[in-house]
Image (cartoon, rainbow, N blue to C red; front, side):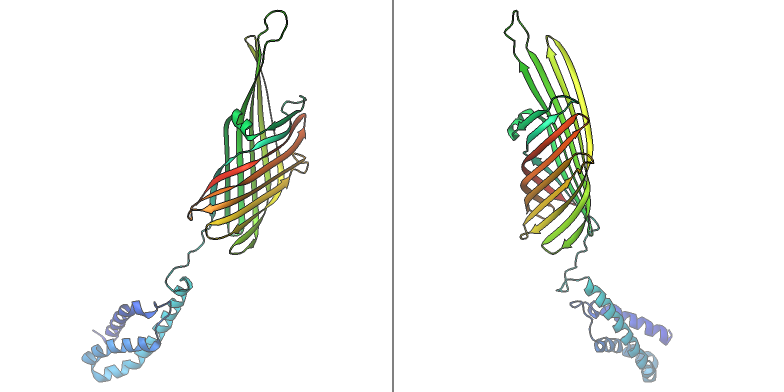
Length: 326
């Protein structure tokens, strides 16, 4: 075996044996002297036994230069490792994922107040319903909020669908002869979706502030079925529009478990409705990194009057939701 081959294998054995001690100690490398002494000690015995003292002396200087280069390399690797370690040198610093996503299905105990004319050129009707009144007529209701962020770019979607059926019966009139009662069922469905994108203009460890812009979509269906003397007649109507909106969202972390959130927007500006606004504020409690619960208050208002249809209402009431983070 040549001296160069033997020397290379000896150095590899030393580096392999010292690998766990070269740079892992609070993210820092050992001294140059330690590395040089280790290499010199392991190689001297083998070189003297095979090539004598003269062979050892000729390669001694080269070994020291090699040890210096290896030590510099270990310092570079140690620095790179420490950049990915915590301040204590043991815990890796987690990298924030590309996307942050959370989904919140929620309940909204909303009452409704306003003026509506669901059919073109029909009389405008004043409506005022408490949440209990709404629940009496409710067939189905669903509410969901989706929020996402990538770096400083934020995205928000909030959708609701409500289907109500209200029944009325007019009894027999005091006229000559029996007159059967008149019945009417009014089936109403309302869909609304608010879609926004924006930018995080301020971010601190416990507070963030986002500006948002987007659209709010509305669509309403109305179906009236009148029965009289065994005969029935149905009248249907549907209409919708889109409102541009601008808004903002603020988030404040009170402590590790409790946080506050407020979000609001305004829009319409005559493009769809004359005016619309929405506001919501919640107190949030985190059970863990994935699951939290929110409770607060939400209000949504719109003033739409176009082509014979009128929908000028405000829905408001407490909200309760559960959030899952991906």
